[in-house]
Image (cartoon, rainbow, N blue to C red; front, side, top):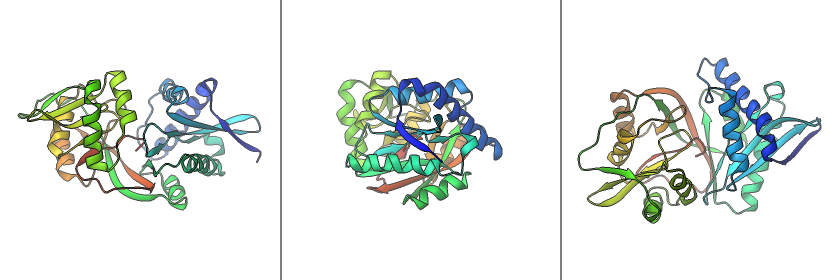
Length: 285
């Protein structure tokens, strides 16, 4: 197999996006789950965004001159996140995914990243086995939940649009909960106008870069996250990711009309601090 790995470019978006959609849709269909990406256009948009963002490292796999897969590393913060990784359905289980994973792991090592994280689809046993064999450790099971917006303010909590002046406070909350900040992602949320903060007694006690599949949230307490979720106008993409161990938050989501779409695994290599607070990971970590 004459497999070549090379950096991705914007010109790869259409083909890599098509593969991304077909790969996820094929695996989901085999297990009777809805696809993470509802159409090829959405797959192309996601891949194009990663290929053109300066905070993402990209690698494309070619077999005999034909693109057969891609992978990405979110380098916007100190701890890096993997994905989306996709392989053309016609060449899956031939070692392409392992090569793509080793490439981004080597990249993380070269830049001295203290830790690598990813989210793995719970029903896909092959990818789980691959990540374990590469050294990843299962840290948490998370539920992808989706449904209509709750639209109910919580007394004592103020949710508002975040501003540039909130970046420091957001980073402080994240360091308090995770031991590291995710300032690069918060900065993107500020630019896109999707970032929100929650205040309690006039102090920022949590934030969300968005309430979406590709966004994360952090709060000092579970009610801080409940306030952010309750104020969201929608839950973009397949939904938000709620750690199953936070049974209070998950039960609250279910009691407010949200439903579990699927279960996923948060997996890590390197630095990992047991969260001291409440959080919602993104699909990248």
